[in-house]
Length: 326
Image (tube, rainbow, N blue to C red; front, side):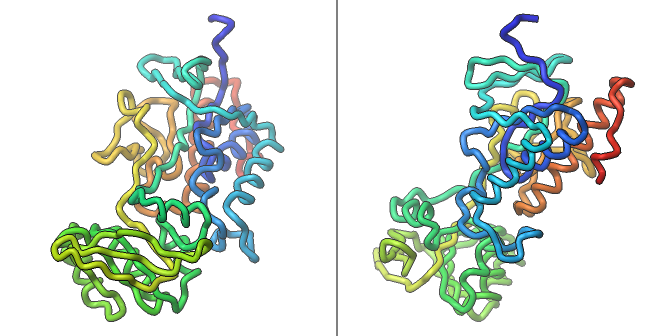
């Protein structure tokens, strides 16, 4: 083996709640995990100002602070946390090969993929401005809807997820205005009926977002345009929710792992195993249903346990650590 190739027992790709939780469990099991943080250290949660629904934080915590604490906890048990991202993989042989930043080559006995999924946004300058400011733009109603209790919000989208999130928001908010770009929903009939039959949801068909309005700090409204008539209206709102889908960060694995039609990694039901032995998946790279920090963390734990058992089955000298379960 060349001196330029590093051999590791457990490589974790990604640094959100799933990746760091996997690292904590893997480190406690004496697997000497190496974790690469990726292009967005800490994952999507670093764009969230307030996290109030993760157990253990009765007063809430910011997303960046929470990720820093998870990183410290992983490092406390010996995880080697590194900057950089995986740009290429080769799972065709018995050795799992990856390349970091197109340069460094690593051979890993086990790999835990925790690369997550990225929310799709409209790309408007005003949208991105208030997203970065944390002042009223969100891609997760379940995560952030609570902050808009008894307020008026706007949601963009026409699929099942958009309908589900609009219905969720309707239980918290005074009014929900739903912008649908075409003259019909893409959602199933039952989901469409649910939003149409909810009194405080107003649906505007053939309507697109022109601009997210604000005072420089927080969102105050949304300027929308009817793409049939050209009419422009300003909608008062303190929250702007985008529900046009997510893109899993899995492109580099597509030649080796089984993905669904939208790119999510398919795992063996009840486990985190993929179709390649020794390669496991956790978090939003496989989960297109829940997409919560707590569920991601749970699957990170599962992936580490699965990887530990895989190593134990292959090598009788590697014993499953009872401390992992405590």
